[in-house]
Length: 298
Image 1 (tube, rainbow, N blue to C red):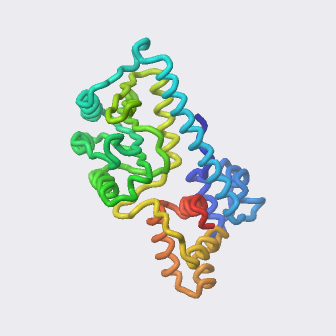
Image 2: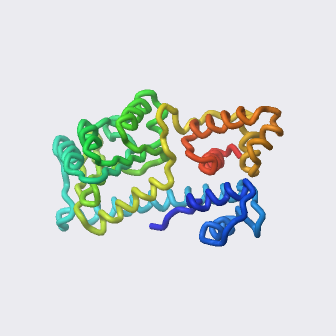
C-alpha cells in the first residue's frame, strides 16, 4: 500500500523557516516543497492549492484502504479459514474477549488498533488489560472513528484511555475493528450476517498479517491526533471571522501581518489559531490547514 501524499516534518520545518526569511538549502525537503508547489525557485508560495491537493490525496488513500479491507474480507469469506493454518475463527464471545485480553497481557512492545465502535455497542469500550500493559511499557496507538467522539460517553471513554498513556487519533469511516499485538498476532471482529453476534479472526504471522499492519499504518498517517480535553471533529459551521483567519493563514502571512489585517494583537491571533488547532485536532498549522480544507473552510 502506498503512503498517502503529505508534507514530511523536514519539509514543513523548511517551509516555515523560509517564511521567516531563511535561505533554503538544497536537499530532499526542498525538492518535496517544489514538487508540492509550495516553493518556486526561492519564492514561498501560498499553500492553499497544495493543501487542497494533499487533502484530495488523503481521501483517495482512504478509499484505497477501505477497498483493501473489503478485498481481505471477501477473500476470507470465499475461501474460509479452515484451509489455512494462520487464521483461527473464534465464534464464542467469551473466547473473543479472552483472546483480546491475552494479546494485551502478552504484548512486549505495542498494541495497534482500529476502532469503529463495538458492533454490539456504539461506544468504545475500555479494556481492563490496558493499564497493566501500559504500566510495563507497552505502547498503544488507536485510530477511532470520528463519530465515536461526537457523544459525551464516547469522548469521555477515549479521554480516559489518553489519560493513562494511549496515543489516539481520529478518522471518519474506520472500516473494521482490528487489534494488532506487536507484529505477532491480529484480531479482526466480524459481525455475523444475522446480527446480534460477533465472530473474530485471529491472524498469525503471514502475508495477511503484514497487509493488516500496513492497513493500520495507512490510517494512522491519515488520522489527526486527539488531544487531552478537546472535543474532536466538530462539524460547527465556521464564522466569517474564522474563515478570514484561515484564508490569511493559508496565504502564508505571519502572525504580525494577520494581526495587522484583522486589527487585533498578535497574542489574539496566536490564541485563535491555538483554539482552532485544538478544535480540529491539528498539532501544527500545516495540519490545521489540511483539516480546514477537508471541511471546506478555505
